[in-house]
Length: 265
Image 1 (cartoon, rainbow, N blue to C red):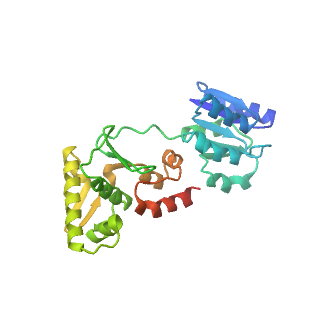
Image 2: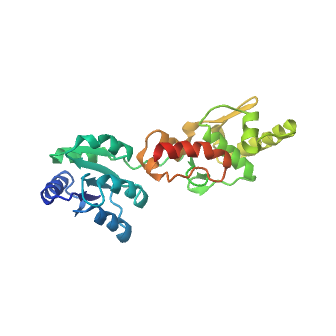
């Protein structure tokens, strides 16, 4: 495990490093008296610390500003603020800090934060991996899932976006094409896409992902390993992976994208 410690006060930095060493004796620790230097090490040396313990009130780049920049430079790195000022707790929450330690810092407090680091996710062989951030993509056992028709994939994207809600045929038609003149023909096309999607999922033994009831369809969210769903559940890895882009290949996804962006930034 790689750990960064940041504090502009030499004595406070020494105490912080000693507590980190006691709490995690086998970890690699780097100390910085300026947040900008820690950020440079990440950007220029290719370092990606697992966790950063940082003061907040520092000259130049503050701890809060550092946390915002860190999200872009090293999305998987966790930040724990170490400060003597409790009024920063709300700001720490807004930049999605992993934790908040009030000085004087102790090894026990550091150990508590380290213990709360998320464990590596276990492989989920019986779940379909769905990527919503950036372009919409679907993977099965590490390989992209192939769709015979572009709009079959878009149908699945729309159902994922609805998060298991039952979608009427008319809902799908309006999302994919807007207002149409020939509703009968549009419904026929959607039925074809549903049949295509069912065959694609059946081919990998995941046909249970799709729920079909008369003229309504949905997905079983529990069978999907989806970055969008994990973000909504508060998974920090998913939160940090979101860069403001969501299903960028589909214009109807802009509403969800805007909501996520507003909540995240």
